[in-house]
Image (cartoon, rainbow, N blue to C red; front, side, top):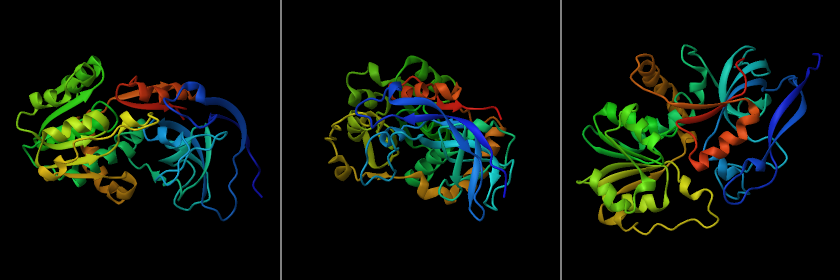
Length: 346
């Protein structure tokens, strides 16, 4: 029988279910012990966690959910999310000690996971920053790829609008659209982010939605002939304004609705009749349904990264103790680019 290894394990625990906007005090930084052993004949993998991804969908998991595509976090237990880790021990023949992986892991220093349930992907290309596997080479990158290319069926010369455009997904959608030869406008919530979109990420235009009193008129100014493709990250009033500005046969990929996640009563959308009159196709999607396309995505994106044709902006918080602040900051727009937490440098 293998000798048991017991380690101190720092963790981020959900204290209770959350209502309204989350606070750092809803999460607790705790020390617990963990036995780093693998039961014989199992496909359990012991991981040392390196990077954790902060993603907007995690807000819904902080509440008590019924009938959702994701499960609620369990109060009193570590929260979980996408992350990058190193394999310390493995009962799964697909993973060996020393492998680097990304997938669903705990917000803690060490995790013991079922390799199948955690949807672990082995990292083969290490000539890019490992942190990229929480973003451009991980779930957000795949989300941008699937939403834009598969859901929206874009064509050269079309007009594209991206909300929450400086975030983990939006910044990539804009660049994919520019590469295809589209006219691209993005919105964000600060002057710094707007400047980033125009000066670093290559958007044709960008604006601060918080400074606009009339979103319908504002979008009309940027898209006098209408919007072909809208990549939806925000919902609410923004979606209503976009519907009024869509072209005939426009496409809307519904990726997220961050403006609604912290509201006890979500806002209604009033201009849905435009879907009929303008023959708009509006489709929601989950990236997890499309992971069979991941190898194809990597073939496309890794050469683009290495050639310097794609820029990816990260906002990295250092240390697990700073993870609650980083996650909560997403919902107040504090992050610039992809928000992640570095737990360890290996």
